[in-house]
Length: 179
Image (cartoon, rainbow, N blue to C red; front, side, top):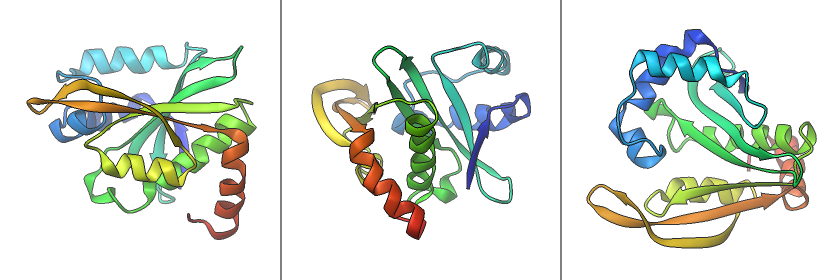
């Protein structure tokens, strides 16, 4: 598996994933579908940002299965937010998000020199919480009944990992290729 920058050729996949109601409900903060123009403008702006890195998750054969990123980079305090979406449902719950997150954290901590990564997870998305915890994330707080999804309110869980807590997990991952 590897991560690569998003390219204009990824537009059809990004539209497919962003407009999939299941993905929007589980992962995305968007409520409405996106059209080709809006998605194209988003891709065009990606490379101009100094506070964000957006990447495609690829299998070794080159097949794109999702996207992830480092967002809202705070260079002074050396922290950022991460997001992960496995867009191809056949790859859900098979360890791909965990492997991709470990690669992303390696880049964030050892290339960008960040010291802390954080994110939020909706309480009904147990899989996201579990794989983030495998990668060293710990729950820092809960925003109770914070988000309205599927006709009811749900908690938003705030998670984070510090480089020093992640490093032993990375060493294990490098030796075995899994967690």
